[in-house]
Figure 1 (tube, helix red, strand yellow):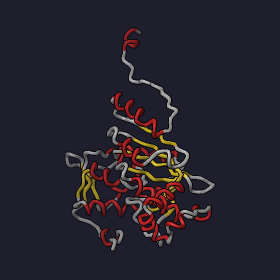
Figure 2: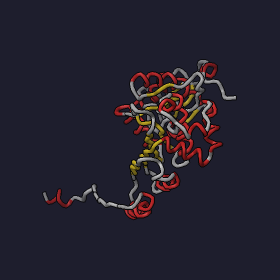
Figure 3: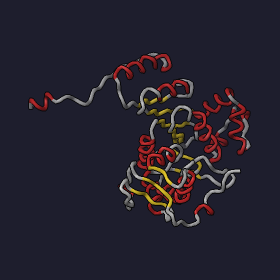
Figure 4: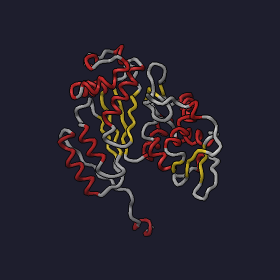
Length: 296
């Protein structure tokens, strides 16, 4: 018993309350975190609207440690109004393909907010506005029967955090995404592409279909070979896909192979390591002919 009692504890709990608005209290919170020299930090910014936490503050939070994560909830309608006032030309360019103008954004109604196309446009706008805060941003909307009004972003500094978050959404998710389900989730033509992704089994099937073409195309753009760490850094910047579906799409693809550091070939997805190498096979099919058409 003496040995157990003398064993140093790994868990330290400190509770501290602030009554000031977040922006005023944040410097003191930051000082506590920096003073404790914590390596992993999570901020849960669950605000009522959007103005309680400024984008510049989120940027600063993400710089506290290399492993900082932020859950950032806000009213998307408020953000649209904020962006349209701050940079209406930028917002209008982002929504031009849907024929939605910045003036229309000031008068959103329930009918417009319920459209899947609007969900996709708003999600992309949110992503473009806030991706300056972190390398990995998940701009998925909270499933709300009364309309698409609230977003919950997850921001992270490393792909591993985004990878885990995507997996959690597939297990317990109540969020939605409209767009592509493979890589580059916002690279789609709303006239004939894009779908509602609910992080359910049917969506995972669709993701695997898109990943079958997306992954070899990405590797080809990188020069036919990528380390797995390089692949993860690129892929998880914009994908809703589950890790298992990404790995399955690699191993099942006739044009790809995953090699161990010793040169062996991986056969199971759960054995893939960041030290592995992903490359195109020397003998390939004609996947580039059938992949996504290049943008003009």
